[in-house]
Length: 335
Image (cartoon, rainbow, N blue to C red; front, side, top):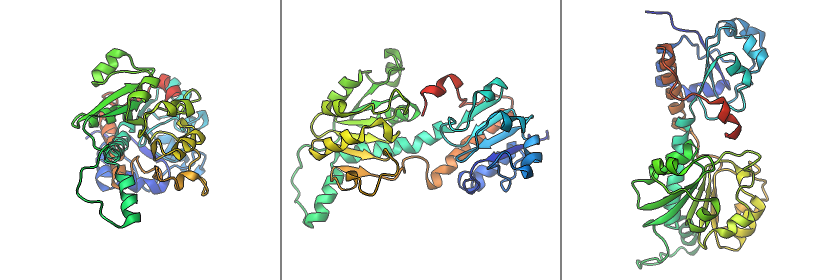
């Protein structure tokens, strides 16, 4: 049996057993020689010098130090970085690609729970579940068995902002339901939208024609406050805005002002700032439903990330190309 390449974890140490529980760790160790007790949280730690010097594959995750030239100099044998989370923007530097080091990300695996959360919120919002729960809690009386007008998911229009991995996964998950999705994304053309099975609309048109708008764009200087007062005013009465991307994509002052009119509702898993200050009106507005950044991989979902990395390690050791390489040219427009 050929010798397995030397690998090293580089992340917050307490995350290793969460992302790589027994099954994921076992699969990874079939491909590489890695010690879960040896974790690099600081590439300048002299106690790690020997391990870094022999590392061929670096398994990174949340809390990984930045891979600057000095860090890479300490790992002369490094040939691949396998990231067990989403974006590599906080740790990757151009030097990685200049040195021909392969970089892979588990962003596709992390997209799954975010898209699932989004789908759940779309369906629940269509039933007006959050307001109905609050009314029942306040009134402590069952409203009766009559049909409730204005709610339901039959033909409800869902606008997706951003054909990111998560945005595309949301579109995929919407297909079995009797919902009508549309997409806006400046980097997608008509053919690309057709391949996803959705019409491509300008942002303003999507806002005007969607009962539910769900945000899946990256936050960059160009997209900060992508949805502000003007955009919110375009949404139809009773519309619902969902944000699981980045808080800065929404102008929160404008959002609060619009929510205070009672015309729209918002479901926010991310906010700006994050966390919200204790006196934020969003906590008390009845048409704002706030969750504490839970949509991404949590609990047992984190193992999906470890399994994705183990699969990438298997491909790498077999001489295959990574299934989920990171394109350095696309990093600028990623979160």
